[in-house]
Length: 352
Length: 163
Image (cartoon, rainbow over all chains, first blue to last red; front, side, top):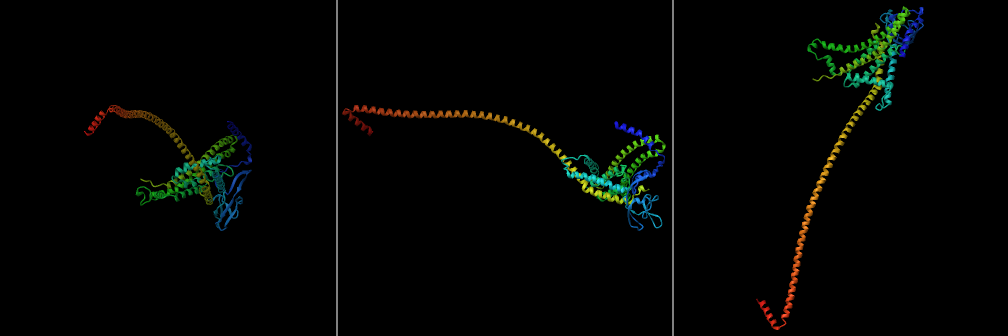
């Protein structure tokens, strides 16, 4: 009860803060596009905050291989802030907007091979390191303790709960018989997605990179599932694709069903890719949108701004909780569908 | 729009990072956890099964015990009955035997008495014969004091012997 009262008082005080900070010279129109996309897209630097109009950001290494014969170049992205550096610059518009381009011989923009450690790559590295730390730490507990004699507590206990949940509820049920072979991949996928989703919700530095809301990341994850399904698929799986149990005229002379099945092979991972990408991206947009209300209403006076800010904060809390749920659900769904697809590819022919 | 075009560099990095994470976790991470948890689950299942078995055994043991007691009681009564029977039989037998023995002894005694009597009679007879001979001798001696008589007697004796 006391906490709620404190929160209420705090919310009442919010308009006053807004009044206090409302200085006429810092009034800048919020560029909604830049605000939204700037937060969710990949970038060559990690923008942390802006102090007195100056951006505070971590410059990241740019690694490019030129297509115009300049070879491999590695430099800090802070050189790109002022414009061109060593013939490379960040395109401001056009096809390669916000990407590093170099000038071609005819003055056109050419995209070099770009292996820069971008915000998302760094985010991936940080989150992966965190994941490795957590999982290997958990594994270490089991190596040091006799699990048959005692049960873990605390963090290891939570990890055990999650691992057994994924293992028992998803993998065992969906893959079927020889699920053991696949459980390392599916568990890795689950925890990888989960931790990246969670870190994406954290609004400040080590988190905040929109990793799983990036289509390249989800594409790779989907490809891993695709290859796992198709490489380990059994004879029955391929027979079902190339010669399914349907009336013959659906297969010969026009291979209608096989064509549909083959398209299905690709739509499955495609749906995995788009589902995760779109859900996380949409979640980020929603939270950013709710927070933007505070800044958008700054010009409408203290009362409106204060009231709407309070609403935005409440809504933001709600959205963050929702995103926590989505972070889990999306990891769960991706893993479960991967397991289902694997299970389908392992199905034995029905014995009549 | 750049949002839905996967960036090549990021693809490469993501593949590399995820591949490494997958490799490391699949080798040193998850199998360890899964195996340990599985081991514990197995152990718990085992323990529960054993406990149930023990309980079952205990229950069986109680009924077994009751059965044994029941058996023992039955056996006891049977043995008692048998013992009583045996005793009765033995007493009966002993009685019969005793009677037999008694009659046998009586018989023997009777036979012995008869034999004794016989021998006593014989002795008496012998004694009487001797006595009578003695008496006859004495009588004869007295009669033979006269010579005629002696001759007469000797003649008689010789006649007697001839005939």
